[in-house]
Amino acid sequence: MRQEEYEQNVFINCPFDDDYAPLFESIVFTINDAGLRPKCARERLDSSQVRLQKIVELISASRYSIHDLSRTALDTTNALPRFNMPLELGIDLGCKAFSPDCADKSLLIFDSEQYRFQKFVSDLSGQDVHRHGNSAKVAVTRVRDWLRTETGRTDIPGGTAIYNRYEKFRTDLPAICSELRLDLAQLTFADFSYTIARWLKTHS
Amino acid sequence: MAKNQATGSVHRGGAMRENRRAGKGVAATSRFSDKAAALRPKSLRREILFPTEPSTIGNEKIDRAIERVTSRRK
Image (cartoon, rainbow over all chains, first blue to last red; front, side, top):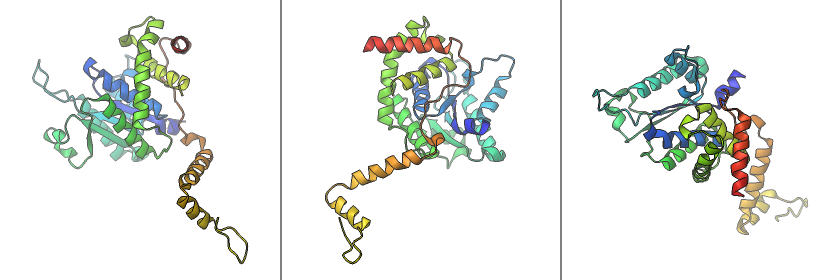
């Protein structure tokens, strides 16, 4: 069972701020529409667990991972960079390198500009790093193409088809939240992911 | 369709060439893909998966909300 879930899980390492929300939601939707299961640190609500331990568990339970370094920038308050995303990418690369069970892991790395990452994590030089340009449509296509190649599945819909469905889902989402008497921001990650999966089942 | 005059058997390669000339090559490929999809193990076919983490709202409530929104649009 663990092996089956490992093959289906896609870990998302990205910022959780409001500015990033459209990209995050489109990526979660794409993973669901590709027939895989999105996982992220937000899904665990157990406060007794140390945050980093939760992340390590999610990384080791996911064959596929998306790491977005595009928000690694100096914070205006303390002039220091946010380094959680590169740290989690490092943990994932270590997991792939040192765990024989996870040697087949596949990673998709995003940054805001093509070679920007070489200025702050030059050891990543030689890795393929992709750009989404803060566009949900580009992110959907990049994630879809990567999953199509790495999973070997031929039945994953095209990027445009997924994005068109995502737009329809986004149109329905406020009404669904209103039916549930919830603000969109109040949906937990598990509920958001379940809503996408159920909506996709209903609209396939 | 190409036919071996000596044995009377139909030559499939010839038939495919003829189909391509007649612009029917794509149909032959699609039939092959459909067959391949049917033979593919179920676990490799795209299936929408649900989260393994528990819902805080209740899955039935979400199902009903989606149903209501969808039927209202129709």
